Length: 449
Image 1 (cartoon, rainbow, N blue to C red):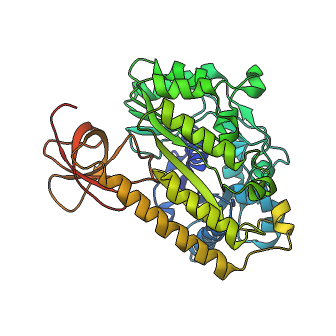
Image 2: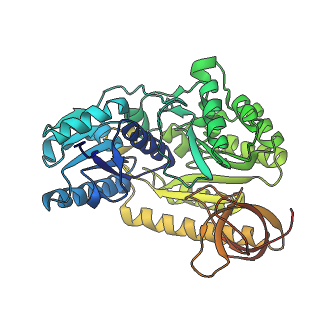
């Protein structure tokens, strides 16, 4: 009798870039004859693809690992494989301290997964973490989608060569490396052919795309080519470093109808001294100038940003400068992070660490200000009609749906609560905004936009 295939379950943690890795992990195993199951309790081997970017992410990863160890000790699963950023960063320590874990794999070498899984099933303990990651997937790499059928992520580059003083990404992911344009275009064609309506371009530093391959920034050119693919609907740019935002890129966003008038632009701070200590390669003046240029050349653009509060040495005056800037800049979307001292980074060694209570207080004050900005921004949309992509059914009523406009990226931004008959998940429908919340919109299905 043929043996039953080994059943694999995967827990994917962290950002969209990690999600792409998780899809590759599952696609590689499925192509090799393994079965994929949603629940670890029904699996032979449970994999957790971890994040270790900041302290909270590390805690979440450890909690997931301990949960799987509990299942293994109870006889519910046979083996555990820990993958991704956590073993890439702390592999030797984890291997020593977590004897219940059967295997570790870092952020590359996914083609070796079938052998690693079979070795674990044979009772072996495995370890596959390379010192200098150089992995890049291409459009032929197997992937098992973990997103709804109507949107997907394409990772256009890997790693980061901009060594900010607070960040461990270069240590974990290696130096920046771009995928070939032809590979990205082929992947996009394939996704569009499968019915994907929204493609989100991700990477650790997307605006550096092409420098290593072509000797010049090539993100604007890539965007234009993607936008002109037959069937392209929404293209969204994420993780764009403000130090390298070219005029060509602005022209591509402004001029191509398929490109969402949305930019994810993490500024991290606005004070010149803090930006210099952070090693961001920007200044308050350059950030203000870029924002003015973007808004002048791309009317109605939604700008998402990220900032850090409580960076070592941040004074009350410097925080106040950031707070006032957030109030004045009126970002459409904002994520604020409490500074996390990551070992191995220059900032972690500073003797000017801000007390945790003070950091939390600053975070609360800043988010309070942004909630007010967001509510006021949203109030201005009342009565307007937007195209919305329907993500899921809303349990609040028969004809109630949850969707997003082009102003909102999946998972990290706001929603539109939609009322309307005859709607299906994945539809793009015109919605008239009838009400607003702090971060979300309320609307009804309309006729044509």
